[in-house]
Length: 335
Ligand code: AHM
Ligand code: MG
Image (cartoon, rainbow, N blue to C red):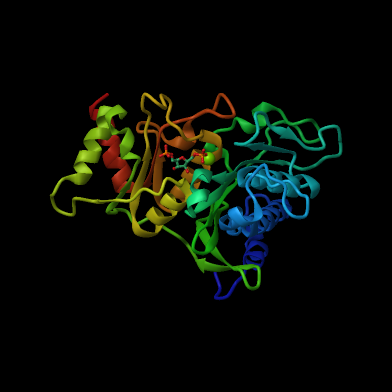
């Protein structure tokens, strides 16, 4: 149930009982992410001052080393989740391997693992374009009190307990699902609280926006090329509008609100696609499905793919149901 002026903190507590597992652990975990996102937001907003306060690798006026923002965001999320002893393991797009937390403690009852892309689209920071954080939460599959293993992280997306993203845009928003719809919260920077601004978010069934890096067109599979031509045809509601920020979270967020499709197909430069199944595609797919949208690799539902490695990449097509299904139809016809 959403109420006017409800803060994210209040919302998490009030909706705790609707979670599948009600120990309060998931609430604490979401609260930690909320906190880390606020800290990262503060830093991201200062990014434009980089020429004044120094570049990554420089030493600032207080003698502290300046860090690249994606490294900073990675550390903040890992520190927050580790210090509060809230999860048993973390995997990050920025780390080669997963991190086991308190793995020697047989009494460690933490049952969740978090997979995170701490700052997605970070190449956009230098030009003051929105970036985001993406997170995904699973219950571990190995026994409590034992060290986490790769198996705990290589779960199908359909096993996710929660997923969300933060978009550091004109406003900072946190959007998440625990499998019971999607809700969006906007940060009031003056107070430091997120307020429920977008209850029950849903993709329109159809849309008029297609988002793809058309610079790679020559290398796309024939089905995708034909679908792009279909989007550009002058017929009925078409041609559609092309909008591509190059920042997954922002492109997804716009398409969810306005109706649209996002595509990152495979190409000769990225033979398996570019986006990571575990840190980017699965969480966005979970949010999309919870918002009446759809996500696939062109043939298979994203959340049904069995991962085989932490940094696995897949082609990604996601957005309004009718648009994704049309793109799949073009893919199937050219198989
Ligand atoms: P990153 O994880 O290195 O930031 O890459 C992911 C980003 C997505 O946010 C975005 O949609 C895509 O890469 C853009 O890639 P490209 O510049 O090749 O179009
Ligand atoms: Mg990324």
